[in-house]
Image (tube, rainbow, N blue to C red; front, side, top):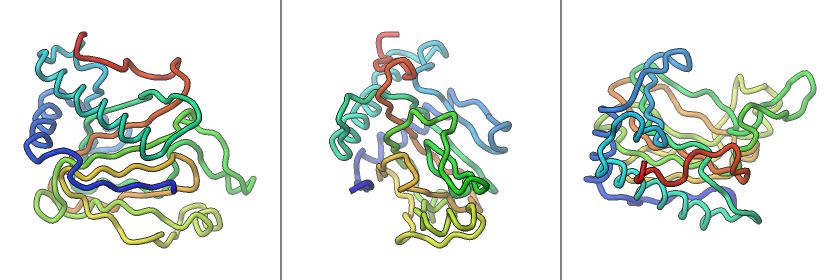
Length: 211
């Protein structure tokens, strides 16, 4: 098993509180994608977040780390490599990709990427598709077809996930879980994204509430 979906991981009021943290501390990253905004959680103390905000964020991110470790175990300890409150707006989409490698069509092989340290991935949805925004469906895609076409035309591997506040999606970060996000056609989609790695040297501060 390399994928786990858990509904109602956190309550609706907690999702709303995290959206408010994002609204206060997120910054645009148009170089990555126009309409993309992020608040790196390990930097909230530096950004001036009050203790109660840092405690809320710590509660959720450490619970996510614990759940991800338990759902998709690894032989060695894993640490938070990145965690951030992220949002994307109308027109944004994520093409099919794997989180820790990229497919080289010329070599017909997967090669390392700048994020090759990532072992586990998690996305926690904070608002609802069809209500707060339209589009933005999460889809795993067929790996073999992706490799043949280098991602140009790829069919789904299973049903799309309709984002709902409190739903947590967890999966291993390699080519076994190529995935994409369909275009946002209205509104703004909010998530908490997290990756785990085993090398502490590439990981962010694990506890932020004391910063």
